Each structure stands twice: as C-alpha cells, then as structure tokens.
Amino acid sequence: MSISLVILDRDGVINQDSDNYIKSVDEWHPIPDSIDAIARLSQAGYRVMVVTNQSGLARGYFDEITLANMHGYMCSLVESAGGDIEAIFYCPHAPGDDCHCRKPLPGMLNQIEEEFNLSVHNAFLVGDSEKDIDVGLAKQCRPILVRTGKGASTEKKLELQKKKRIQIVDDLAAAVDFILT
Image (cartoon, rainbow, N blue to C red; front, side, top):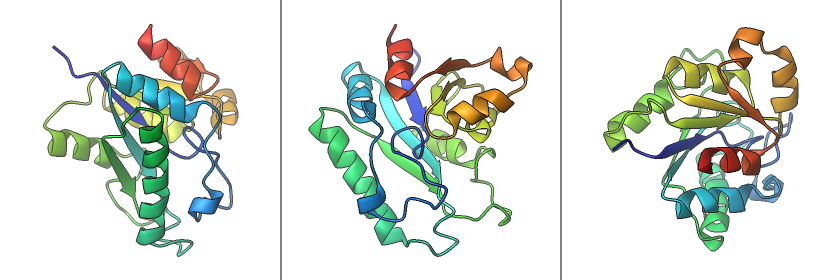
C-alpha cells in the first residue's frame, strides 16, 4: 500500500502571502477555507507535511523563535479544526546561499524521505510557484498549482508542457477536493 502523503507549500497556499514577507504571528492570516481543507485531508487519512522557503530568516526579517511561533499558531488552528500537520520543513537560506534545501532543489523533500523512511514519489505537492511545481516534478510527485498567492501569475508564465503535467485549481480547498475524489 502506498503512503497517502500531501506536501504543502505555506505562503500563498495555507496563508496569505506578502512581498514584504510574513514576519510575525500578527501578519500570518490563513487563506479562507485552507485550515478546514488541511483538517479534511487529515480526517481522510492523509499525512500532511509543509515545505517552505523562509529566506526572511537569512535576511534578518524575523528569527527562529518567531518562525516557530507562526508555525505553532498554524498548527493550533489546524488542530482546532480536527486536523494535523505532521511535520514542517523550512529552508532558512537566502536565494544566493548555495544550499541544497531551497526549492526548487529537493533538499526538504529528501529530508521527508530520510526522517520518515518513506518515498515522496506520487505524493501530492500543492504550491503557488514554479519552484513548487519544479521540485514536485523532479521528485516524481503529483504537483497541484493553486491560483492563490503567486499562483495566478505563475499559471500565466508556465510553459504548456508543464501545464499538461500538473493540476491547476483555485485554492487549497479545491486542491483537497481534487485529492479526495
């Protein structure tokens, strides 16, 4: 039996994104229906994990404690809705830092495989950027592009060949509808 795994990007998928970065719990606002969508995945037996680039750490916009507080808040909302986020992986590096974890590189997905002794092959990966799509395709996941966050502009830029290999939906709630059917 294959593992029922769903990997989510954070900013623009679960919560509102900002070009000025989400720097505090006060700035972290869930996209409508995203919390309930995660709860529905959990209740259907899916393992939910988050992978997120957080270069605001390297840029000094917030610290590890603030990030942990944002993630704690997100998880508490999901738990209150009856769901669970099993793990959160984040890249703390800036784009030019030559790391292996920053999407579109597969480092965070490799971490999932190593820490949980499972393959991400065929897992659903929901994101709003081409980096999300690229890492999903590279690791043989099943990418879903949401139009929230940067997703609508990403959809316009995607080459036709990539569009044919992914599912495109309005938001995380619609992605979950697709996954559960």
